[in-house]
Length: 376
Image (cartoon, rainbow, N blue to C red; front, side):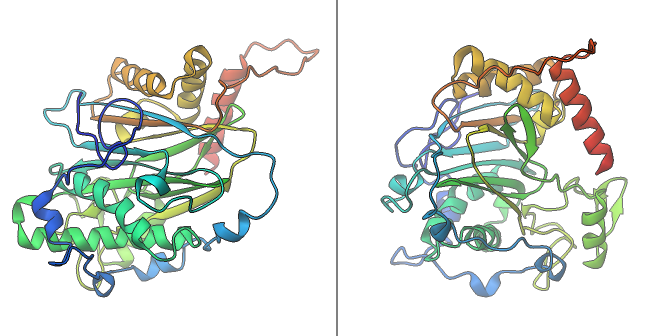
């Protein structure tokens, strides 16, 4: 249950805090830097699937949007927890940076909060997850267009991380592995979520679960079409009969997954952006070990009750992990909870009705969430 802290809060159970990390993969990371310690350009090695270029969301300019007047400025507080669960080894990694600008030496890049959070679910070893956890935020802040073109920068950073890890693996075959990745950035009043894989981010908006990511499973029709168009196939729910995710960083060692001209396994993230308001209370992000036993609305209801009790995002993330273990989650667990206000979530008063109801408000929300999932 313990980990190593870094880059503002990598991997250690508890809240994010100050401090710089030791490089988690010293040998691998050296391959991404030249002798003078400047980043090696990876732009020529980036691979983007043609089918994904068409589905990218439009880029936003946070810098211009921040000039608009707003009464609500998020106050970010975060906490995280992880557990090996019933697995023989721990391959989940998380990162929490409540003050992204200061921790990365950028100063006040925007008016308001600037924070970075991420979860990485490794497979075939932990090397890819550690590598992505360290390099993804680094590539974001080193981009000259950050934070003015957040979506474009984050998408590029995912691909750059993937290409850099391919270089590292070519120098050291022992690093061969893969990882899903989900990053959430709070830039001023905006929440930007980028996802490649089956980690998930869920926003609590006045008690209702708003999914800020889509699980990239090979059986999903959109992903299946992309996979088949890229020369791959889906067998028993697995990509090329080998992976149960359709997007991931790494896995360059797996034949037929990635190549110079693309491939069925993509590191291209899917992005979702929303402007935070007074109704937005907190965000839960977690690896699939959490979502195997929690529906999105169920997780929001559970976390909301805990935050009303103690208003502590660290304890809340631990509560979610402990509950997932009680529900017999069979995977590693990593959870991050980000609060957007200093006070706990308020009690919601349901309007009185002349008709007596046999369902609780929570039950109705879960039913609505289930019906929405059927519609999708």
